[in-house]
Image 1 (cartoon, rainbow, N blue to C red):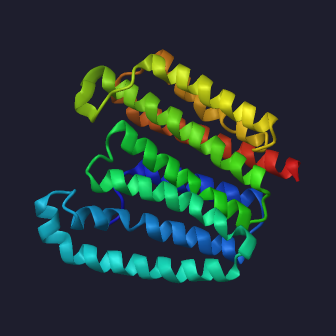
Image 2 (cartoon, rainbow, N blue to C red):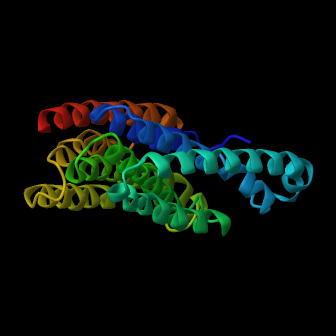
Image 3 (tube, rainbow, N blue to C red):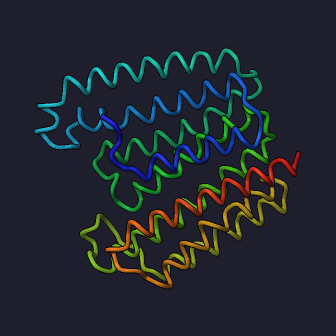
Length: 259
């Protein structure tokens, strides 16, 4: 019943761990991480029960999916109550950010469109958003927490578009929905990094949101230029993971300097 999309684990865990490392561990931050993980683990059983994994999986794994779903929802509820109880009242509104993102991503998944470009982008953005309330709960200021999320969203979006563009060169629209062109990667990267720079200059996000977005964005653009064959997708994936790790290091360093 574990999610099959292995990249999604990194899209969730890197931002969560980074947000805590930028601040300081706390009970509400830990409870929020536990809540996010539990909600994340409801993804696969929900798809099985809704028939998105096929009628055979729904028939053969339905009862197991129900048990897994109820267990994860129960754990998420308990962790969520602990979060609400221990989190300062003035910060509780931050929980609405990942909740809204998660609802959008869930709508794509339940309609069987999670593997389209838009569906993957919605999921990646929602997973990154989970770091916002975690960062605030870990003692980060709103601009620093927002900068962390902005950096990971920028990296996730450019990496997703880059990989789908590479796959689309060979498989075309069969890869699922509209396929972005390789030229779109560079243009999208410029727009998003420029937006981060603008937000940082206005003080809406910490400057780490700009610098932290660069590692994955540069790798994504490089992949668009080099255009490796699909047989190298495993290497491409690990390159993006390494770049994401660098993003975490840059954000933690800039966050501590910002304090």
